[in-house]
Image (tube, rainbow, N blue to C red):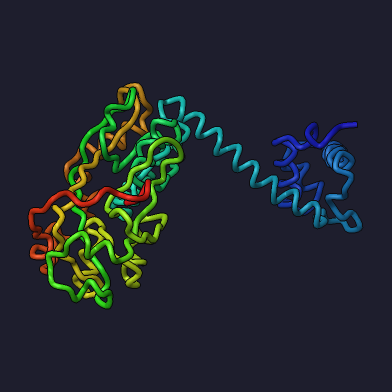
Length: 339
């Protein structure tokens, strides 16, 4: 006796579609160039294999049962997926990767990244994109572990990893901020580390899943609220849950609206040099990665990924607030893997 796999072929699914569309076995047989008895026999083979009735034969019309309607719906979906798969395979043969995974650090401007995704899809490539959110050393680790093909916003020394190619994106300036109702907002600066240490710091956890993690901006003995993303850190700061530093483009609009206050602190300003990285020579990769690397080679794209599409100059309160007083190095960081 035939099994469901034996009878549920693409041709059979298309035949069931035709019967449902035609409304009768006779009309479907004419459209398919078959005799009605042969068409009925093939339908009964499917019914026997599934042990269900697909059509209500109590009338002259071929009316689908609930089971038959479900099979036609799923069959239509499967036939569409088969066509899409065949199209992707044909395009992959021309040099496109089946999938490209991009790891993006939390400091990368999401709107600009989505603009690039939109431009990529406008090419109608067969490549499927997968985006990963990472923080600190997790961004590079996703690349070196084989979980990503391209990493945006890597810091440190990514070129030291075997086979990693790296190019600079630029330098990100981090600003210390608090909500207007936070106690630190009313203290005159520059604020000493021992003053900051008495207040909770909001930090983003390093997303690295193995090996050493990084800690940035946390003082020894300081209370810490750890959050999973830069956006969560911003939300916590807006609620006055603590103090913390964020990329200047991210805090700029909130400072302009009066929702955050920039602090004058004694420590030197935090300047974070970041880049983008991939593994192996670009010419050995598919057309999808080559397209992304071509976009990243443009200065405007690199700037927008760090600063967004807004005005390049900071809002008025920022220049005075970023001034610092030379001081000894701040106390060592306390908890691993925080930014």
